[in-house]
Image (cartoon, rainbow, N blue to C red):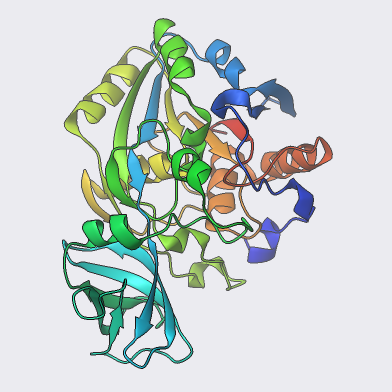
Amino acid sequence: MRLSDFNYNLPPELIAQHPLPNRAASRLLVLENQASDVLIKDHQFTDLIDLLNPNDLLVFNDTKVIPARLFGKKDTGGAVEVFLERITGEKSAIAQIRASKTPKPGSKIFLGNDQQELYISVIKPHEDSDNRFFEIEFSSSCLSILDQYGEIPLPPYINHQADETDAERYQTVVAKNPGAVAAPTAGLHFDQETLDKIMAKGVKYTTLTLHVGAGTFTPVRNEDLSEHKMHSEWFSIPVETQELIKKTKSTGGKVIAVGTTSLRALESSAAFGIQEGETKLFITPGYEFKVIDQLITNFHLPCSTLLMLVSAFAGVEPIRKAYDHAIQQQYRFFSYGDAMLLTRQ
């Protein structure tokens, strides 16, 4: 397939700019592949409770979004914006750097009012990023500096600065492991009350960790999808989660990924035989899924790798019909938008 096969026209007013007052107040589009047709149903997200069965298993990504956007100054006084792609060590990271001139290896970016104590050293361009990212090193712990000076990095299609509401609502209720620079947005629809009702029905939930990188927003630029260089993300799947998946499969329950990041971690583990490590898995139509039965996901950007993933999962034509329906029915799109429940074709 070609890149143009995954384009669609979205009215800008359907891009959700703010979260709804209540997490679980979103709408839920349910897409079912019938023998001869595609069935699309409109629900509220809380209807998910009735759509799940005892012995089903929800798998969440428990990554926590870090305040990954920093503003500093060069030693010459010029303003610099640093946007972390991911943390690679206690003091090291990979980041985009926006400045009037491309920073040179060995240069420093100073943070805060004390122009001597806190700074970022630019090491070199990151070799696997077409010179769009740099390897950097902090003068002290990454996380402590980010907690003090960083801002929550909202997606580029959200047109306001992050505020206190975003600081809470751009995190899932299961978030606990810091390291993501973007939220696993399917999980944003769940509040504790909804989770409690789901568990009361006999449905279980478990977690894994995949630290979402800034590469999730990188557009695919090659018409030939085989030429696209996929971004790398770190994941870890606990033994408990692995065992629950096996038990769910053995008892006839469905394994339901809450978000494309959970799906990508589980399918990467199955494809490469590892439970922890880096993944560059690029899922496009034709991929044979090994673990996931259903997927809860938001609506994704045109020509994005995530739209290709859901098209691989539920079918290209069914996804086209679902997106056409969602636009006609004025669903809210992207990170703060509404959700879909997809079944593997």
